[in-house]
Image 1 (cartoon, one colour):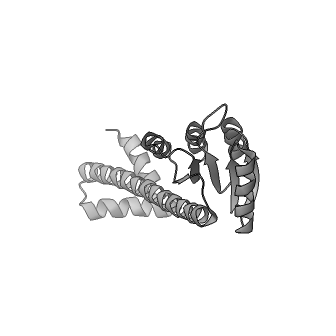
Image 2 (spheres, rainbow, N blue to C red):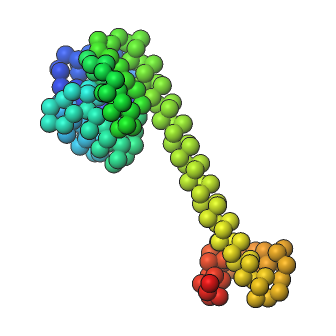
Image 3 (cartoon, rainbow, N blue to C red):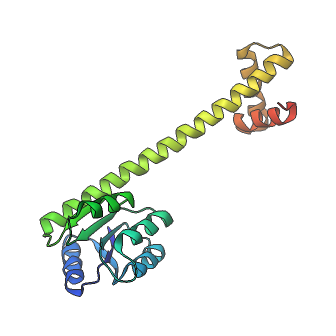
Length: 188
Protein backbone atom coordinates (compact mmCIF):
# COMPACT_ATOMS: atom_id res chain seq x y z
CA UNK A 1 0.00 0.00 0.00
CA UNK A 2 1.21 3.53 -0.84
CA UNK A 3 1.03 5.67 2.31
CA UNK A 4 1.28 9.42 2.86
CA UNK A 5 2.34 10.40 6.39
CA UNK A 6 1.41 13.85 7.69
CA UNK A 7 2.90 14.58 11.10
CA UNK A 8 4.66 17.71 12.34
CA UNK A 9 6.77 15.87 14.94
CA UNK A 10 9.87 14.42 13.28
CA UNK A 11 10.34 11.53 15.75
CA UNK A 12 6.75 10.33 15.33
CA UNK A 13 7.01 10.70 11.54
CA UNK A 14 10.15 8.54 11.52
CA UNK A 15 8.51 5.94 13.79
CA UNK A 16 5.49 5.80 11.50
CA UNK A 17 7.69 5.34 8.43
CA UNK A 18 9.62 2.55 10.13
CA UNK A 19 6.46 0.73 11.28
CA UNK A 20 4.77 1.05 7.89
CA UNK A 21 7.80 0.00 5.85
CA UNK A 22 8.44 -2.94 8.17
CA UNK A 23 4.85 -4.03 7.50
CA UNK A 24 5.53 -3.94 3.75
CA UNK A 25 3.92 -0.60 2.88
CA UNK A 26 5.54 2.07 0.73
CA UNK A 27 5.73 5.52 2.27
CA UNK A 28 5.38 7.79 -0.78
CA UNK A 29 5.87 11.06 1.11
CA UNK A 30 5.99 12.77 4.48
CA UNK A 31 4.25 16.08 5.15
CA UNK A 32 5.10 18.40 8.05
CA UNK A 33 1.82 20.32 7.99
CA UNK A 34 -1.74 20.07 6.74
CA UNK A 35 -1.30 22.27 3.67
CA UNK A 36 1.64 20.16 2.51
CA UNK A 37 -0.41 17.00 3.12
CA UNK A 38 -3.23 18.27 0.89
CA UNK A 39 -0.81 19.14 -1.91
CA UNK A 40 1.06 15.82 -1.66
CA UNK A 41 -2.17 13.80 -1.56
CA UNK A 42 -3.39 15.53 -4.71
CA UNK A 43 -0.08 15.07 -6.55
CA UNK A 44 0.91 11.56 -5.39
CA UNK A 45 -2.52 9.94 -5.00
CA UNK A 46 -1.65 7.61 -2.08
CA UNK A 47 -3.74 4.57 -1.16
CA UNK A 48 -4.08 5.80 2.43
CA UNK A 49 -3.14 8.84 4.53
CA UNK A 50 -1.98 8.66 8.15
CA UNK A 51 -2.27 12.17 9.58
CA UNK A 52 -1.91 14.02 12.86
CA UNK A 53 -4.82 16.18 14.02
CA UNK A 54 -2.79 19.10 15.38
CA UNK A 55 -0.43 20.49 12.73
CA UNK A 56 0.77 23.95 11.70
CA UNK A 57 -0.79 26.00 8.86
CA UNK A 58 -3.78 23.70 8.46
CA UNK A 59 -4.99 21.23 11.08
CA UNK A 60 -5.34 17.57 10.14
CA UNK A 61 -9.13 17.60 10.20
CA UNK A 62 -9.41 20.46 7.71
CA UNK A 63 -6.66 18.85 5.61
CA UNK A 64 -8.65 15.59 5.67
CA UNK A 65 -11.79 17.43 4.59
CA UNK A 66 -9.93 18.98 1.63
CA UNK A 67 -8.31 15.69 0.63
CA UNK A 68 -11.67 13.90 0.76
CA UNK A 69 -13.29 16.64 -1.35
CA UNK A 70 -10.56 16.44 -4.00
CA UNK A 71 -10.07 12.67 -4.19
CA UNK A 72 -11.49 10.41 -1.48
CA UNK A 73 -8.94 8.16 0.18
CA UNK A 74 -8.99 6.36 3.54
CA UNK A 75 -7.51 8.56 6.26
CA UNK A 76 -6.41 7.47 9.73
CA UNK A 77 -6.02 10.35 12.18
CA UNK A 78 -3.48 10.40 14.99
CA UNK A 79 -3.87 12.56 18.06
CA UNK A 80 -2.64 13.03 21.58
CA UNK A 81 -6.11 14.33 22.42
CA UNK A 82 -9.05 11.93 22.66
CA UNK A 83 -11.64 14.66 23.06
CA UNK A 84 -15.11 13.72 21.81
CA UNK A 85 -15.46 16.94 19.78
CA UNK A 86 -12.22 16.14 17.90
CA UNK A 87 -13.42 12.65 17.11
CA UNK A 88 -16.77 14.05 15.97
CA UNK A 89 -15.10 16.66 13.73
CA UNK A 90 -12.79 14.00 12.26
CA UNK A 91 -15.73 11.69 11.51
CA UNK A 92 -17.56 14.62 9.92
CA UNK A 93 -14.56 15.22 7.67
CA UNK A 94 -14.79 11.64 6.39
CA UNK A 95 -11.94 10.11 8.39
CA UNK A 96 -11.99 6.30 8.56
CA UNK A 97 -9.85 5.68 11.62
CA UNK A 98 -8.67 7.40 14.77
CA UNK A 99 -5.65 6.48 16.93
CA UNK A 100 -4.59 8.08 20.19
CA UNK A 101 -0.88 8.65 20.79
CA UNK A 102 1.21 7.01 21.96
CA UNK A 103 0.28 4.18 19.61
CA UNK A 104 2.02 0.88 18.98
CA UNK A 105 2.43 -1.23 15.86
CA UNK A 106 -0.34 -3.62 17.01
CA UNK A 107 -2.65 -0.56 17.10
CA UNK A 108 -1.59 1.13 13.85
CA UNK A 109 -1.69 -1.75 11.38
CA UNK A 110 -5.21 -2.96 12.25
CA UNK A 111 -6.46 0.65 12.15
CA UNK A 112 -5.04 1.02 8.64
CA UNK A 113 -6.48 -2.30 7.50
CA UNK A 114 -9.89 -1.43 8.96
CA UNK A 115 -9.86 2.03 7.37
CA UNK A 116 -9.06 0.51 3.97
CA UNK A 117 -11.83 -2.07 4.33
CA UNK A 118 -14.45 0.51 5.39
CA UNK A 119 -13.37 2.80 2.56
CA UNK A 120 -13.73 -0.02 0.02
CA UNK A 121 -17.21 -0.81 1.39
CA UNK A 122 -18.22 2.84 1.11
CA UNK A 123 -16.91 3.11 -2.45
CA UNK A 124 -18.80 -0.07 -3.43
CA UNK A 125 -22.00 1.26 -1.85
CA UNK A 126 -21.60 4.60 -3.65
CA UNK A 127 -21.00 2.81 -6.94
CA UNK A 128 -24.04 0.61 -6.42
CA UNK A 129 -26.18 3.62 -5.50
CA UNK A 130 -25.05 5.45 -8.64
CA UNK A 131 -25.78 2.38 -10.74
CA UNK A 132 -29.23 2.01 -9.21
CA UNK A 133 -29.97 5.70 -9.73
CA UNK A 134 -28.95 5.38 -13.38
CA UNK A 135 -31.11 2.28 -13.81
CA UNK A 136 -34.07 4.08 -12.23
CA UNK A 137 -33.64 7.09 -14.52
CA UNK A 138 -33.43 4.78 -17.54
CA UNK A 139 -36.56 3.00 -16.41
CA UNK A 140 -38.43 6.31 -16.04
CA UNK A 141 -37.41 7.44 -19.54
CA UNK A 142 -38.42 4.07 -21.04
CA UNK A 143 -41.78 4.13 -19.26
CA UNK A 144 -42.48 7.64 -20.48
CA UNK A 145 -41.55 6.77 -24.07
CA UNK A 146 -43.68 3.61 -23.92
CA UNK A 147 -46.60 5.67 -22.64
CA UNK A 148 -46.23 8.09 -25.54
CA UNK A 149 -46.12 5.26 -28.06
CA UNK A 150 -49.13 3.62 -26.47
CA UNK A 151 -51.13 6.87 -26.63
CA UNK A 152 -50.03 7.96 -30.12
CA UNK A 153 -49.98 4.58 -31.85
CA UNK A 154 -52.63 2.72 -29.88
CA UNK A 155 -50.14 0.02 -28.85
CA UNK A 156 -50.23 -2.12 -25.75
CA UNK A 157 -47.30 -1.94 -23.34
CA UNK A 158 -45.43 -4.95 -24.73
CA UNK A 159 -45.77 -3.73 -28.34
CA UNK A 160 -44.49 -0.29 -27.35
CA UNK A 161 -41.53 -1.88 -25.57
CA UNK A 162 -40.84 -4.12 -28.58
CA UNK A 163 -40.83 -1.09 -30.88
CA UNK A 164 -38.30 0.71 -28.68
CA UNK A 165 -36.13 -2.42 -28.48
CA UNK A 166 -36.25 -2.94 -32.26
CA UNK A 167 -35.29 0.70 -32.90
CA UNK A 168 -32.42 0.25 -30.46
CA UNK A 169 -31.19 -2.89 -32.24
CA UNK A 170 -31.46 -1.37 -35.71
CA UNK A 171 -29.68 1.85 -34.75
CA UNK A 172 -27.11 0.21 -32.48
CA UNK A 173 -27.94 2.73 -29.74
CA UNK A 174 -29.06 2.04 -26.18
CA UNK A 175 -32.80 1.93 -25.55
CA UNK A 176 -32.53 4.95 -23.30
CA UNK A 177 -31.11 7.04 -26.16
CA UNK A 178 -33.96 5.92 -28.42
CA UNK A 179 -36.53 6.68 -25.72
CA UNK A 180 -35.05 10.14 -25.08
CA UNK A 181 -35.12 10.91 -28.81
CA UNK A 182 -38.74 9.79 -29.01
CA UNK A 183 -39.67 11.98 -26.05
CA UNK A 184 -37.84 14.94 -27.59
CA UNK A 185 -39.62 14.36 -30.90
CA UNK A 186 -43.12 13.89 -29.52
CA UNK A 187 -42.68 16.48 -26.77
CA UNK A 188 -44.53 16.38 -23.49
